[in-house]
Length: 526
Image 1 (cartoon, helix red, strand yellow):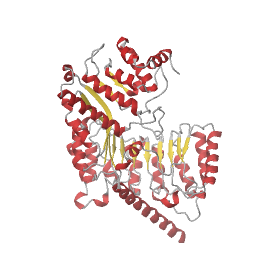
Image 2: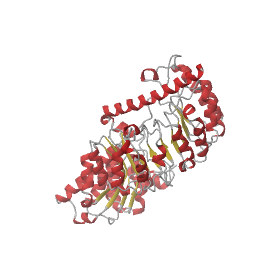
Image 3: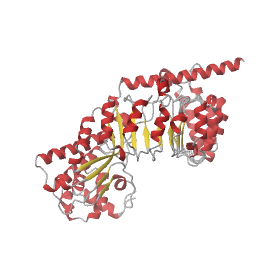
């Protein structure tokens, strides 16, 4: 639905080259609606001119492109390369050129509202992802400084200060230009402010240097991923020397914490890290997938005085002692998102797992149980554990050997009382694979299933949801992984080291499953 004002704005944008020239005749309060109309129409020249003459103190993409009274269409997921390039070049020209009708009062540009998705709806079909936005913005800062030194700016340029907030993404390819822009921050009118920071494929020296330049006291999200050799001793140095008072979300790379590497002299290191993290009073999300924490989860999390809401412990080789701690911890009654994938929960810690879900049932919205060895014999265990979690919005159970009959029972349960449910990751039923297939499935077996039989099973399961009035629930089976825009954008940098790390942790998981299977067989013999 579009208002008459928005329709008029679209007509103005379509007027061609004269639109940019006519901006000086327009009232300042029309700029926001013209901005969204230009973005929707992919009118890059008009968009550039709007930003270059912006008359307001703030330019916030979440507010400008989200649902508004004049246009209900949400454009925050449209990361159009043409439009975003026009925006950032317009921002450069804003500080370099003399004001026209309105004085330069812009103080904050907020780019954090953009969401990167797999399928773009913009006409050009070309995106400017998180990495490319970081790269282009820092290049605009550099070009601004070069123009100022060359005398190609107006005298008032040096008096302008615009904070540009973004979720930055830095790898080896754009490290130099980003670090230069941050190093020269005080000299540039465009002040890059990293609200979020993702770092990949960087040596530790560069990582620490970049963190210092990025002003960690303002970071809300920090992601250190994949090709970064970050380990517990490095984290102790980082948390000791840098302060993160506003940090809400922390992601560490695979095997960053590995208790097997700790010697007798490092016995208290995880406790020290916990104490240092306790100083991060705003920390709510902790992502530790593929670390090895066996028997040490209490040391890491018990010092935290503020409860975590999102905890990712996928493939962390947790023991029954770890799960007993988590189920009885401060965090258990506040968990919103929980990922325990890669743990054979029904055999390793059935009672404490049920207790944990019961404790967090009032808040839990997302649960990850991929490759947890959940078979038909564990169906009653799974349904009883899920029973109190009526606020569940996402359930991810890929890679579990559940038959079509078991999944039918589960979907009948989910179709009844789970009104908030929106997304399910459905495993290929066990009976769609050959009888000699063993779990966890390897790459050569993963896609070797009866596709027609799976289609029939999926149709039946989706029909159960539709019959209960829940046809809006998205049911997917992403066997090759869910789309990750950051990985997709920088896939050429994710080299052999990431594959080696992945193979290592998967090998550990397979060993755990084999041990559990051996114990099962032994009990059956007895």
